[in-house]
Length: 215
Image (tube, rainbow, N blue to C red; front, side):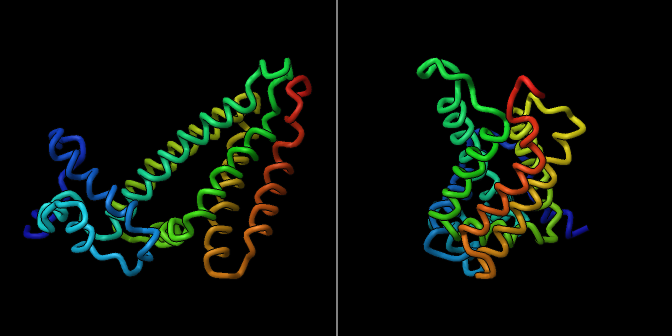
């Protein structure tokens, strides 16, 4: 049927040149989002900024929500990789002979760094709020892949925590983070209260595992 012809090309079948063009489109969104709120961002403007033809953009992305979700996933993965490296460096054994930080401290440090990135770039928080409710199935696929990466990142920080505790901990932390981003960008929650809520939830669940010897 005609609708089948408009489906975006699967990433797994793209050539290196196609992947590069696709990446230019998501990079353009990342560059533009600080100046243009996600609701005002247009596919045509993104295509122009990236140097990719609009028709080609629609071969890679089914809709603006699909493109925004892919750009959000790219930005978040880069941020998570950088933050994980910073947390590992700052809390590794060896500096002044101090023992490594406990799991609760590591997770809170990770969350603080991520939240500071949102504080510097609030339109990315607005982008999260938009794409989380997108009905485009291809946007949902992007979010599902990102959620799996996020679970892996948190699991690495919680390696001492039993799985039956780590799983609900991730659910609670991510739910608090997602709800907090929406409330903060809507002006219903101050950034300080947002951080406090996230810290309270994290300490409530992971506090008992802070001391590795008692886990």
